[in-house]
Length: 120
Image 1 (cartoon, one colour):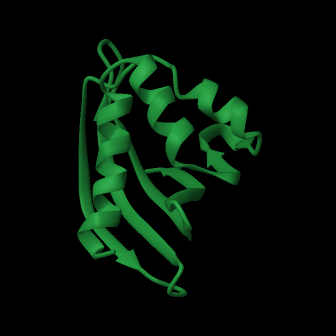
Image 2 (cartoon, rainbow, N blue to C red; image 1 turned 90 degrees about the vertical axis):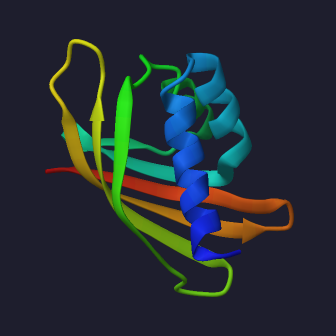
Image 3 (cartoon, helix red, strand yellow; image 1 turned 180 degrees about the vertical axis):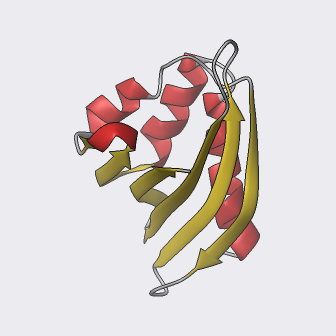
């Protein structure tokens, strides 16, 4: 997998989150690893896969911009994606954050095992 392939997975996730709740839940049902942890703003920690998939069905983003995406490979079977994001939802102030997503290579492809958002 190339650098752009892993970044494309992140872009696919944002496109899903910017379309419909059904598209978002379908994407995350497919891409999440068996064991996954998400650290979200406000001190929220999600570590139940089913609860994470359900949480992805929220109100869609109306726009998003990934800023300076980077990829590193701590091991051959992991990929760490980091970037900034500026996103908007209709009627809400802009959301600006630093993101990190850790993917693990499984026999059926790359799976998201960890995600963290740090508001900026």
